[in-house]
Amino acid sequence: MTITQLKYVLAVAEYQNFTIASEHCFVTQPTLSMQIQKLEDQLDAKIFNRSKKPIQLTEIGKKIVEQAKIIVDESNRITDIVDQQKGYIGGEFKLGIIPTVMPTLLPMFLKTFINKYPKVNLIIEELTTEDIIKKLNDGHIDAAIAATPLENESIKERVIYYEPFVGFVPENHRMYSNKTLNPEELELDDILLLEDGHCFKESVINLCRAFKNDTTSQFHLESGSFNTLIKLSKEGLGMTLLPYLQTLDLNEKDRKHLREFNLPAPAREVSLIYHKSQLKIQLVEALKNVIDSVVRGEIAFNDVKILSPLQAKK
Image (cartoon, rainbow, N blue to C red):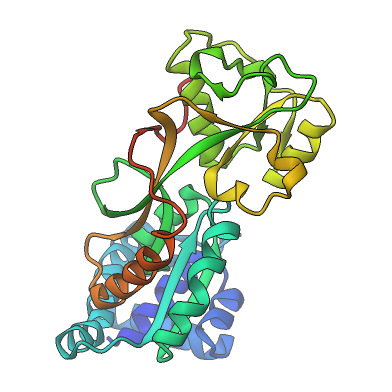
């Protein structure tokens, strides 16, 4: 039995296809199939039911895969242990970032991090919070930047900043004349929201429901980006809420539509998160230190009310 064989088994279990699994393992399909067959012969047990489409695990195969994950994870961490002991900051580091943070935060720290740590191969992927949690638990990414708290016992959270919500109010709106906003005045039917899957949308819903017991509101206009929401709002279709960093690049004309909330301002907590068994702590610390250094000059809000990114209860 070898670590390589176990990696092949995990790949087939994940992709449920020998050809796709071999592509991800960078070997030919016959090589991968042969090694898995050797392992099955050695164990005298069938790991996969090949007659099913897609390929499925047998009952004993499910237990083998669970143990294989532990063995492969622990073997991968041997290098991490050595690097941590040496204080070496380099190698591959896979980072997930939620869509509502990626466009504003990534340009702020990426160049600085690359210049400071040229030996790190930083691989960045835009992911939803749900995908981030799954990939952290499966070991497919090393860390992520997401809205917190997530209330997940397997994940550690390191807060990097608190980002207030800011209203974007069109001229024809009832609250355009207001100098500041109160959460009590918000109406869900009146707010343009992001599409399902964005935790920022859930935070906005939670904000409104924290002050009202209305649970029957319907959302008629949704979009996948803040830029689209701003354009729809300017057309007079409703107000919207933006994260503070999203407002920094607005032109002077659009900034006239911005309205801050009365203190404590509703805000989201953004954290660097990683699995509790993560050993690349020196890389996590390096990334957090760089982000701290660049964000500190842009955002320093303390008098805020943190809103949950967890899905709002219907």
